[in-house]
Length: 65
Image (tube, rainbow, N blue to C red):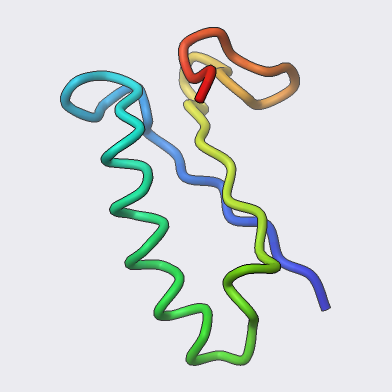
């Protein structure tokens, strides 16, 4: 089984497109993922902005990290 986690609303973080906020969310979600039987190290976390389309179809220059 495979899992991909899209971390949406990255345009709404403070500051916008914050890598540190993404890492906070990733850490928090990883604990839940582990509880349901997934290995967090094998899960792909993708920062996205659905409203602006960042990282939806093509890599975004706003999140080069």
